[in-house]
Length: 195
Image 1 (cartoon, rainbow, N blue to C red):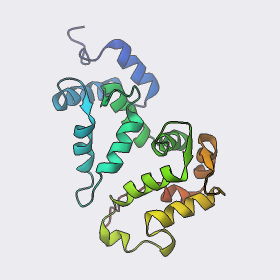
Image 2 (cartoon, one colour):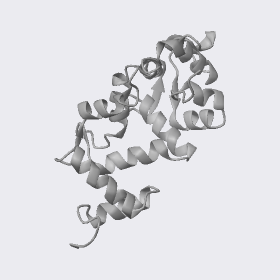
Image 3 (cartoon, rainbow, N blue to C red):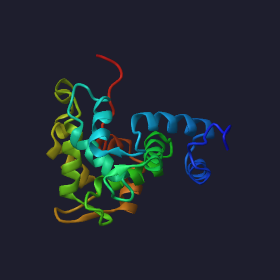
């Protein structure tokens, strides 16, 4: 085991991650090494995760959204992310598999973890997303989606829901999967070109 490049990573965890993600043994070993440098105790606290996440949105406030992202990946609910939770998070958010991304998005919106999404939960996540959008970009949004409330209303109408209805995971995944317009509304993608 001494000359194994991923000796710091248990064989059981390595096999599990190779099976459940698209990453190679070398990638996992390299990430584990940098993960340990970042978090010598092998865990990332919510506060540390927020700091890391916020670096991706220097001109906006990503704190609230980062808290929700953290919650959705803290599988065991212990208030920290271990290496497995961290890698699964990377895989889900970077994966090209739309169903996986939408299942994760559903868990992000399902704040209370009860298996359904209500309108208040949608508004809370959409509000957190809006805090990440720079002000000048918000001003260019279409009239019907230029506030968290308007965007929430548009999403709720898309699903054909009344005020106190709920959305199940199946409805969410199927409804969003084939609708690029709605996919755009449930997330925020940073613009890479500077207009």
